[in-house]
Image (cartoon, rainbow, N blue to C red; front, side):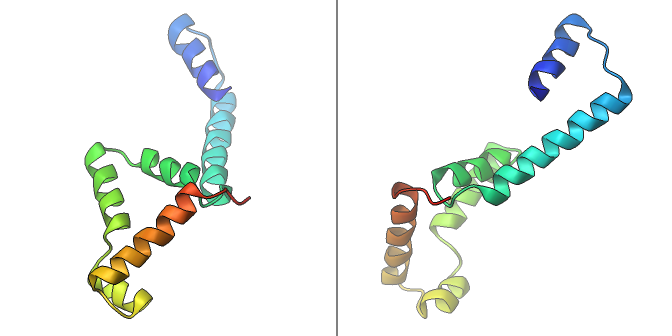
Length: 103
């Protein structure tokens, strides 16, 4: 609804009061925050997070860091930073992405 009102304003010059625009802005931020916080851990949440980044460069960096985190993180998480630890992480990530979503 928010986007439709903004399009109407842009295309047809529909007047919106400052108070009404503020209410819409607050509702839009609340909706985005709710989506990020309460989505399942499946693909929807990952793609929401990726889409929220401002540039393709940052999106690529985020996805790369998700796939290949730094060795110090891997040692803390898996007690190893070797290839098998990365394979284990990849397997777990794929199961979460491709498996059924949890509420």
